[in-house]
Length: 251
Length: 258
Image (cartoon, rainbow over all chains, first blue to last red; front, side):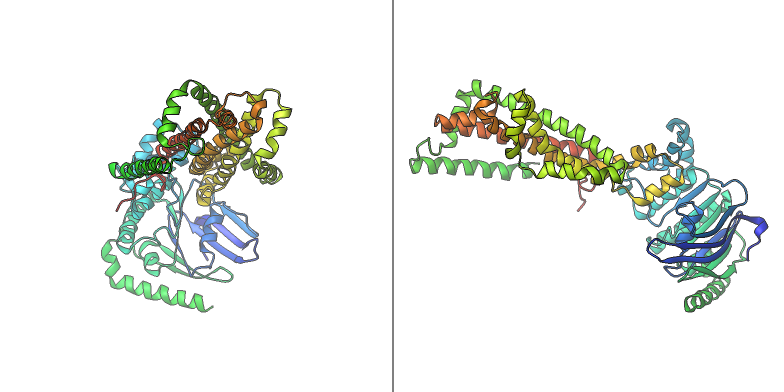
């Protein structure tokens, strides 16, 4: 399916059966190419979050292999919830990955400030998570993933709980960051519109058991301006992906 | 602030006044029920005997509370290391908690030569369980996604403990501490009662017993008032400590915006 030579990480024949007997994934083949923005799109229960967790090394495979092209690079993970430490300031929350690596706070400060600036959080270092809006908390979560300078960024429906205005803004900011940093992104979503807007490639997944049922490249070059949202090409792609998703849900 | 303090103070004054008036109007003798004025006078007159007793009881209470905090947290941390340790030893903590202290205090007083130490052990047994139980719950209540995140970053067990589990447990621990503060005082007083005339004959409970034998009811009330005031003070101080520790981040301590 994917060009294996350019794959950063490849899952081959992966099964995942949870201890309660639920078959989350069955014979899944999937390759993530270096530098792409890949979306996993599917109904709930199709195992798309499970794929992310397995790539991140959280949880064991029941069968199959995961192969990294080179050394497993730094991984950034953004959950659906911001998953912040409520007792720590924004600065200390973003410091966490570096703190685990025993990098002194003084050395880390410049990197933390840069990560905060990248996601538009400059000046909020001293705030506590509960003092921030949902969108701002998600920005903290993204900054925390970025501060470790990941090679691959795994995002599990990061904007699903946000209002549409905030989500559009974060979509645009994320695209701009991706365009300038060029990490690889694997983005899990259940929104056709979000996946078409963001991705260079979409894998449509179907449920029970979870597997890839269609692949849709989105050949619209970057930079994608907000105007893309209202363009004819966008509507065309959305219709195409929706049809594939509909077929996946019938299967 | 005034709105929070004024109503209870006014209510207290009204209550005391009603008590005083009722006692006088009905000519209740002081050896049945003294009025607040007589009790206050007794408190001042007998201060030289009551105050040293207060110090004894407060010292035992604070020592027991300190021991309960240190051992309660230490055992909770031990429990948090392994489910097997927790399953094997938690029942004994429960047994200690549910056994009435009045029933085992005589044994402890017989076994332990030094009475002050025996009283301390009794007060500790009563007060350590809430800290142990709450801290154990807190240490096991860390956000699973945060645990996943630290696993992803390759954190050691020690880092997970210091960075995540301990801070998550703080509100739970403080809740347990607030309960234990009052229980330590109750434990100390109960143990003193049991030790009775065979005890060190100096704590506030002993003063109450002694006043009872002598039918000196106003002094009994004065000693009782001192115990209650101490308990309230412990509660207020521990509440304040909890508030200061959590005021920036925990919902329980943050002012709710209208």
